[in-house]
Amino acid sequence: MSNGYKYDLLVLGGGMAGLPVAMKCAYSGMKTALVEEDLLGGTCLNRGCIPTKTMLRSAEVANLARRSEEFGIDIDGAIEADMDAIVQRKDDIVESIREGACENVESNENIDFIEGHGVFASAHEIQVDNQTLSADTIVINTGARPTKPQIDGLDDIDVQDSTDLLERDSVPDSLAVIGGGYVGCEYAQMYSRFGADVTVFQRGDRLLPDEDPDVSEVIESAFEDEGISVQTDAPVTALSKTDSGIRVDADADDPVSVTVSDVALAAGRTPNTDGLRLEDVGVSLDERGFVETDDSFSTTADGVYAIGDVSGPPMFTHSARDDADLLYRHLAKDESISTEGRTVPWAVFTDPQVGHAGLTEQEARDEGYEVGIGRQDFADQGKPKALGETEGFVKLVTDAETDELLGAHVVGEQGAEIVHELVLAIELGATAEQIAETMHIHPTLPESINSAAGGVHKPS
Ligand SMILES: Cc1cc2nc3c(=O)[nH]c(=O)nc-3n(C[C@H](O)[C@H](O)[C@H](O)COP(=O)(O)OP(=O)(O)OC[C@H]3O[C@@H](n4cnc5c(N)ncnc54)[C@H](O)[C@@H]3O)c2cc1C
Image (tube, rainbow, N blue to C red):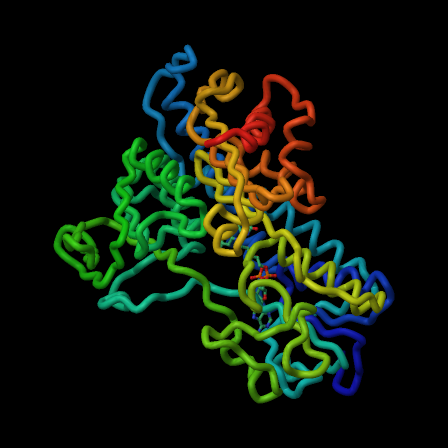
């Protein structure tokens, strides 16, 4: 589009929030420009959720194959990961989804898709190469990238980030994963199951620090059972090359030092806001560089909104999509919107899986609730026994005064799937009694939810 044309809406970044908000607003008649410098679909589709879950499935198959005898099945020969085939399967799946997204954009006559790096020229203008695009409303959706932490020697080492780990053509002999959040944990288990000798270094005192401590304990014990070394309270301070590989030094009470063939970084995400000239046009950033927004995605500049990862936590695809849906309703339908009070669940796709909704027990206590707890271990239930997956539990946190569900924490087989009825229960204000009285199918994993809810009223 040539200089001088004014769009109704300009969206900078075609990720999991930018793409749907552009599509929906364009369908409702707004003339929209969508600017993307890389691949449509952003992190989730190309470098995050879908590729990791696709490759984790390969790791799960390897693990089940190794356990086959437990289920009375003979498999002859070594179980080995063919990285070329694993990466190819992942690429094929990602490509098929991306093709669908591209077709939808191309066939939408109200969208101009502009490939290139956009920067703000003014609060209502984006410069892409030698074009200046203008609109009264601009949505920033530039996402985030892997953080490079301050570690001595890091720049001299060929470390791999979460994107590089999706493209490997061989399994590393040994891998140090720096970071024990969900990205670090998923990759640690994936590469351990592909055959690498894995050590996870975690700065804090447990893996998955956003989870209930009981959940972290189950994951740590599962990792140790699989031969993954977990180093907690162990911030990595230095990396150096040696004759036998890369030496990793961590500053624990008893300082830890290991030598590995490869190092992976999973130390958080940095927002893509540098170089956009945001502060020049009145868009304020917080101390970590995330765009400051209110509960309806407005930035400090009139008519400029920010959605998805670029505006800080929660940083998930489903929350980015929800942002997009809310903002569309505001921009195209003039509805008043707010993110206040929405339940943002999440999952960790380790094995056992983690499903998380609402408050942890500690968060509920910190907010002043008198808390009721119901817990059902999978080890005591029929379906987990039949599946051979007895690790984990369902833990429910209720307001003891009203019996309403405040939080739900599932760690175990299919934890990410079965938590959803509890997300709905929290959203609808259901009580533990109502959940306990709702018939659940036997034998299934969610029966544990039934039992955990029934246990809320019993003394612990
Ligand atoms: C390894 C990994 C695994 C993950 N797994 C999950 C998961 O299982 N479930 C889940 O919910 N979330 C997961 N996430 C998080 C999820 O990917 C993000 O929360 C989600 O992609 C955020 O969407 P977004 O639209 O905000 O940003 P993004 O998807 O990052 O999109 C931003 C887009 O903006 C473009 N861009 C940036 N700057 C410019 C510019 N100046 N000009 C033009 N274009 C620009 C980028 O190229 C990108 O396409 C994972 C993330 C990682 C890294």
